[in-house]
Image 1 (cartoon, rainbow, N blue to C red):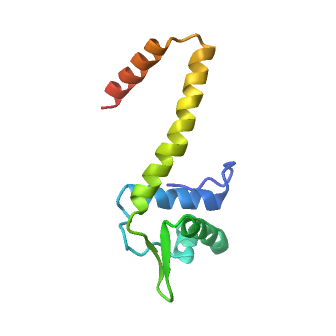
Image 2 (image 1 turned 180 degrees about the horizontal axis):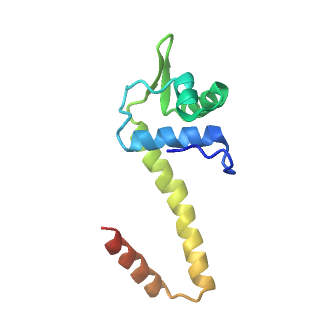
Image 3 (image 1 turned 60 degrees about the vertical axis):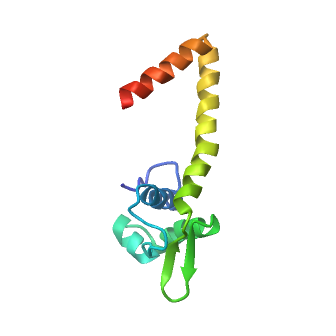
Length: 124
């Protein structure tokens, strides 16, 4: 992943999102040490404080935990928490937006369901 400096999303949020993707993709496992703020800063060529802010966000969301003097680690159920949150928040918002747009375009419920099913088949 590349951090997009000209993106409207703050860099620290992009860092937090990247780490979440690493957890979802099983590249960071439960109880595994995550990158330090200095490693992230070097990896993405950003300020260490910005990287630290992304880590702190995940710490506050209880996806990471600290071991004094050793760094931060992935909590045991981090992947489940991330998936649950994304399903509950992101997919729900996307579904509402999709239904609202379908209504504006006078697309019937049946037609919308067929479109979703067709899209699922194409992505298999």
